[in-house]
Length: 469
Image: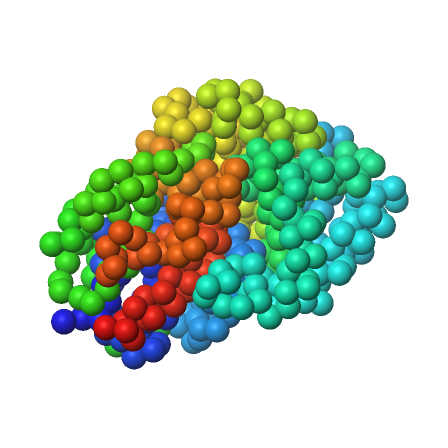
C-alpha cells in the first residue's frame, strides 16, 4: 500500500507530492492530461517553433515562493530569466508607469507628487520580504509566524480595499498601476484584502522580480516532476480519475482539483455547495513577426505589460465581468512578452505574445476584436505583426484544465471572505469529510497563483495524519 496518492499534476499537486516524498513517504501522482503542469505548461499553440504558455507565463510568486526556494529545481533544469523591467503600464499619451526592481525608479515613474508616498508604502516591508512572504502564505496551524509584528503591520495596510490604499496617491498614474496589480486576481477593486494583493505583487517585483522560465512555464513543472522521480515518486499521465476506486490503495489521497470535482469523485455530495467561482478570462496567444510596437518605450523592455487607460476604466472592466455579467467594452488586459528576454521561445526575429481579458463566468462569446482594438490604443500597428493567433474563452480553458470551472483561472472567486477562507470556513482547510482525503489546489489558502504553497501546506496536514496512523 502506498503512503499517499496525489491526483492532479499542477504546481500544487506536484509540490504536495514532492514534500511528502522528501519525508520518506511512498508517493504516486496521477494526471488526466498527457503531460504534467496544470496551469504551468508550454505548447506550440500557433505555428511550429513558437512556444506558448497556455496559462501562467510570468512568475512573481513562484520565484518568491518559500516552497519552491527550498527545492533544488535548478538542478532539474529550471532557469529564471529576468526582463529589463518586471512590468510596465503604458498610458494613451505614450508615457508609462513602471514596476522596476528599483523602488526609486518605480516611484519616479509616478511623478513627484506620489513618489514619496510610494516609497513610504513599500520600504518598511522590503528588508523582511522573505520572512513576510513565508508568514502570510502559511496558516497559523501549519507554521507560527516568524515575524508577527511585520505580519500584523502588513495586515493593517493590506486588509482594507485597494480603493482605500490608493487614496494616499494624488495622481492617476500610481492609482492606475496599483489597480492593475489588484486586477491580476480578478477581484473588484473595492473588495476585502485587495490592498494586500496589489502590495504583494509590488514587493515581489522589488525583491525577486517578475521572471519567466527559460523555454516556458513547463520548465517549472518538469523540474518538480524530475525531483519527485529522483525522490522515488512515480508519475502517471493520461489517467483520469472519476472516483476513488480508480486509484490504488493508499493511506492518504491528496487532490489538486476544484472543490466541485473533489466532491464528485469522493462522494461528498453538497459539502462544497456554497463555494463560489469567479469571472472567466478570454485568452489569446500570438505568434508575431516582430516585437509589439508599443508607443511607450518602457513597455518594449518589460516582461509584463498591463493595459488599462486609468483606474476607472480598470474598475469598470472588472465590474462588467464580475457583477454585470457582460464582457467589458474596454477590457483590462494582462499581457506577457516572454521573447523579449527568452529567444528560445520563437524563431529568430519573431516573438510570442500572451494576453487575456476578463469576461463573465462561462461566457461563450469572442473577445478577439475587442482585445485587439484595446491593444492598438497603446501599440498602433499591432495587428500588422500578427502571424497567427490561438484563442481560448471560458469553455476552451475549462476543457484544457478542469480546475478552471467556467473559465475561472483562480479556481474560485477571490472576493469577500473567500479571499482568505477557502474552500470553506475551517481551521483546517486542507482536510475534508473523509479523514484520509485532502485538497491542495489553489481553492485552498493562500489561494491562486503559481507558488505551490497550497500543496506545501496541505502536505503538512497529510504527514501529520500519516504519522498518527
